[in-house]
Image (cartoon, rainbow, N blue to C red; front, side, top):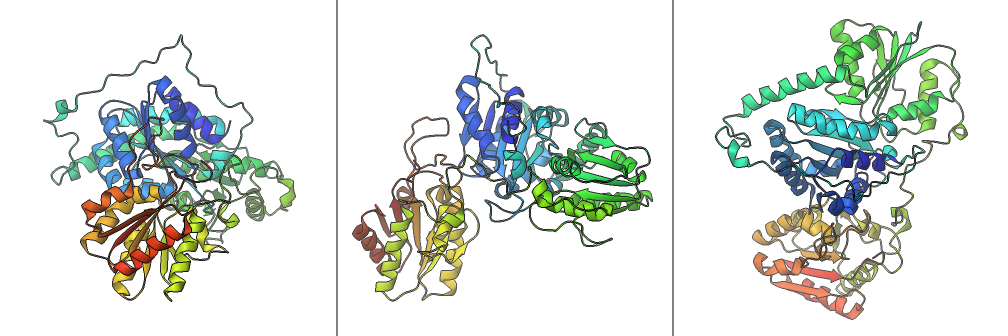
Length: 558
């Protein structure tokens, strides 16, 4: 059983009744597995059009009295942040857990942001399993804690945690016929109207934030005695290692290979925010020097240093920062076992074992079951993006134009590789249309083509398209409709005509929005018909106004 299977097991055992998210690895597998058992378990689950919509759905369900799970990768939490910064003040009724998957080294992301920073920013309790064996119990605990505090709880996972196997068989959670699933009755939200419980407004912000801080104080009290934190203080230990979250499992693997006669104190933290100050101070007081191990940012290291200063504790705390004795680990990228061993050996003053000594955590933790090749492999054979961009390049060349081509995260990023080498700009989901407008307004004589995927168009591209229409940006919006969310595992998108739970629905098609947006030229073409594709581009480039093209052909993986 790997980390995501363990979290799935915990979610089912916790009695989740609503689950939603947007595809993005890590964190995708938990919702994927919930979708498979949703009907038999009495769960409503969906792939939402974006993370903001997913969080709003989950919070609405939790406010109505049903336990809800929100699933997104770290960059996806950015999309939901506006809503999150209001519901943190409003709280929740039933348990609401935010499962956030971070991607140190950005194996399948545009950055390697540390979502613990956003948990601190939103002032929400944050947990992270130190070991896979704890994950199911921590998921159940997150829902219980959420209901006691009436707060959403952030449960963080990293890619290594998601895909690491703990040696146990995967859980069989098929519904037994003699075990009917009972679901709590929803609560009438109108009963809360007089106390304005679910209204965030200027008149109650200060009071709500004061209440939020009181809840965090309660969380600290619980975290001080949490079984998800492990303190080991061997007699005579003068040095210690403080690990945060799943870094503790990597530390286990490394210490097995390091020969050190000196006893080492350890504090493995599974409750990351608020920091259990008394527990941490007790650990620091026993040590002369402390090495912190965490991914990715030095958050616990910074807090431990501040705590030592406030309490007058003389322990020297070091880690990924370059200050106070030098950084023992690089500031960027995932920490693999050989790097950790080198840093710990330097800290302890012993020899580091060779990289070949490690069988775990010694290579990038890519999913072995992924259908999609890595970016370096280029487009899949038969991908409809290939003829689309060949047609685009051919028409630009016949017109003597270079063209600026922008895309969103997804398979289109591979267009930057040979033989196409056509891509100029790629940032975040839904961003290519808005950025294209900025380039077009700045360079009126430049041909600008924004290329969102079908999923990206509905994710956050549609508001940008409305902005382009309102402000008459002279760009070409080329929707690459391969009828799925391919790069994250072929989840359905609005153009697919099927929901995440397998229900057939009428497809939402980008071209159907063109009349409402008053887009004067719209063309839909099959990229496998090269001449039709070229004609669509010729028409758009002659239009000299906002145009919408849709290249529609199914992904070869489906």
